[in-house]
Length: 240
Image 1: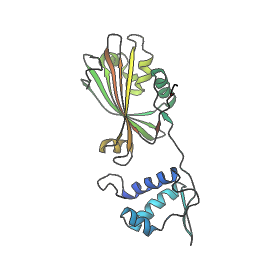
Image 2: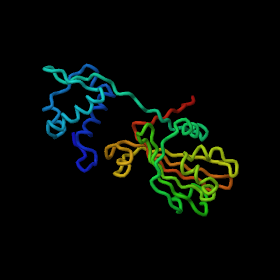
Image 3: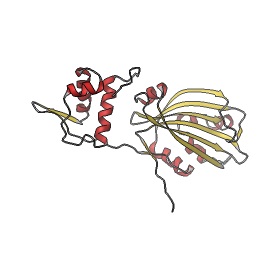
Image 4: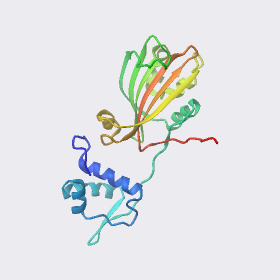
């Protein structure tokens, strides 16, 4: 199995992530004895020291346990933590952000134009751009680029800087949000996203683009979000 040699994530951590996935999927069930370090080293093209580092990492997490003279065994299971639902209505989406109360790290802020598509609607005169990371229990789960109509931003800059934006917009009455659309695509983490989300380069991610407009079709919010793939789930009601 090839590892990402130019990744900022150490090889032992990449291998530990592969081990976690095998445990989570049941490929390595509880009670299984791991292949010998020599076999795993040959599979990943690394030294036995690197394998021992990966095994030690999962042993500290309670996933593995070495037994003297017998080998290393799977002793735990990986908790599925896909707690973040990508909702399909604005009201439900706003409630998700109210309930999760994410820890927000603002990376940058500037005044700019928004990269709108022709079908998005009319552009506002100016937008405030905010780049931020949302975390839960100090674990980052998404990176988001926000383009917010500057007129709206100036009404409550402190709230917009310190709170999640969507619940604030959902409660607006002047102007009210009349249309909200989102598109989800599956991709892989680039170098910047990998660093910010603390995941290996090219890990699966969900990319969501959200556009909110007012009654006159002015785009007051554009959000471009990259979610960690191992945190999100989508529930859909497939109506007969």
